[in-house]
Image (cartoon, rainbow, N blue to C red):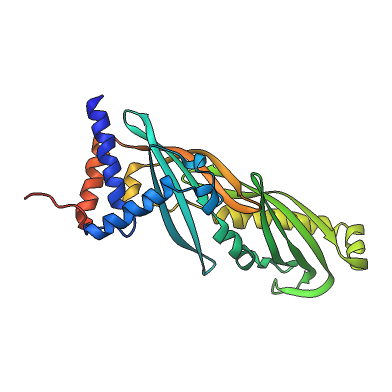
Length: 283
């Protein structure tokens, strides 16, 4: 039991050293300590709208990263809590602030949804709002139906319509990421042409395309908690989680899992830190 606690204590020190921007300089460590204390001691529910209980642990960290989706940089922050789970594993509780992704979502999601010789559907997203553990996406879909020519390209256009769309999405843990999926889509055709599209069942075809192609896009672009590369040797396993509302309408996500903290893993982490120049070993 004593060696187990020693391993955990050593690992926590290692995790501190691995945070982005940290090095062997004293001022870097002071900056890290100040940031960590700000996360653990300040009233986060007031400053960020995030309930600290969602990521509480014996030790807490904060990571801010930027990812690129469709060539658009998206910043988001992860708040993490660590505590003992078993003699060889640490419990991880993390909350991701996805409001940066929420703000950029209209730019990221707006564009062609399907472009085949039979139908072309263009999606325009206006607003994304979190509601409880779901995300509501509002926008419109412009569709046109054509006949394929001999070169399998769009030819004669025989119908076109624009429909207002409201979709509801959720996220679930898959591997080390959160994967979004569309739960439902509600389409409202506009005007006389919209009524005609209803009559001939074209609205249903647009709805099916939104569910199918939109689902394919979301499945291909999961949201993964940003971690330092050296963290991979800990083999984090996320067991549960999903989207969560931050304050009124803000989008976030919570995940719960565990990480390997066996002696062999700690040795690997220490080796990686040596390569980074964070730790020095006596020759």
